[in-house]
Length: 239
Ligand code: F6R
Image 1 (cartoon, rainbow, N blue to C red):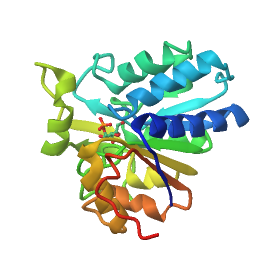
Image 2: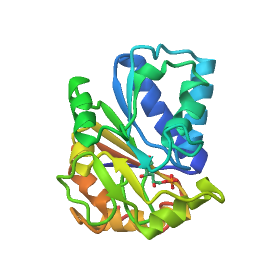
Image 3: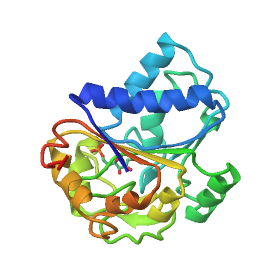
Image 4: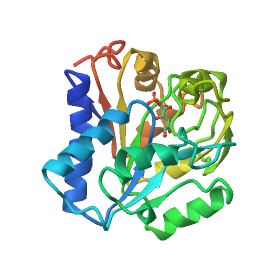
């Protein structure tokens, strides 16, 4: 596991964006797994501005989204499909056909097959929930879990309900499983803000612990964790 401790949120976002774009530049046909959420908003904004300033070819790349809410239309403004259309696909004029979305009507096995057919995910981008979830693999999820329908915990619903305004927050999602995520050749997690500090401290002090699914990532040979000072504020490093 490699940890990058950044001096600011901007520096953390820059580190993540640089890793992604360097890889894309050297391997234009790479397969990327993408996360959504507030943490990733500045990553996509910087990705767009860097590519506009220094164009790189992205038309051969392919993208798998990590998860999607169930119970809302895929074109709902708060769906993860709309999120990535607004932040990456439209600003960079990418083709929607370069993206695969968890197929809310077809189920997880179909998605797993698509990932396999694409040769697997080269680089998987990940955030972390306040409860240590990855994707929407909530505490209690098995390390062997595959893409499937999941129930969101009250904590996750609380953290995400503001995206739905007065509308009803979905309580279910389709999420790549922990087993599916661990098959990514490289994993890149970004955590920013004080609300993630407890989960990050737990992650660093525990291994293979179902109560904090992110701990499973530590067994991956190519896992990079990028932290801003707030997310890192509860850890102490004995150097
Ligand atoms: C999003 C995802 C989630 C988020 C996590 C953190 O695709 O899979 O695991 O990364 O819930 O969300 P934010 O960044 O909104 O705090």
